[in-house]
Image (cartoon, rainbow, N blue to C red):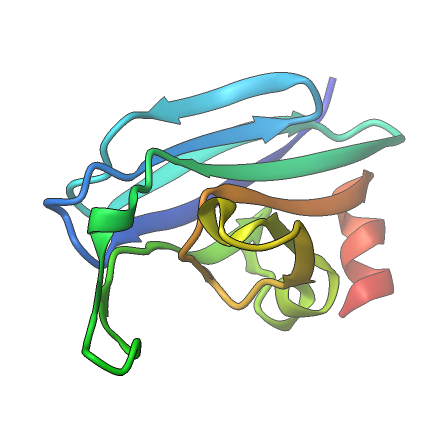
Amino acid sequence: MSVANCSCEIDSTDPVAQLGLEIWVDNTQLFNIEHVTLPQTLTWEVNDSEADHELRFVMKNKIVDHTTVDSQGNIVKDARIIVKNLSFDGIKLGQIVTDHAEYTHNFNGTQPMTTAKFYGEMGCNGTVNLKFTTPIYLWLLEHM
């Protein structure tokens, strides 16, 4: 069986805020971090035989105290999870993530559910989904 090597870097804009992150491929949880305190690189493998897949990043544990606003309601400090340098077989996805990943959340319960593009930061409890197919090399060729 051949595999595709995948990786990403994660961090928090506020290591004191106990933001958590789960990473899933299809229905398999690969990582479950209850409190992202330090930058770290995560790596995993995906079976590279022909199939459809879904990569999910799930941010959890954010509470209202993790966001500071001024008297006009403008955010002056906000705890966020950063996901960067997502790569498949050593190739950074970059713009592919922006073009194809979807971030679904409800502004931590303050607004209706919404889906938006993902630009590398998660500021609300929610899920980033990236659908891809294997063999990874063919998917990369189609999306670069």
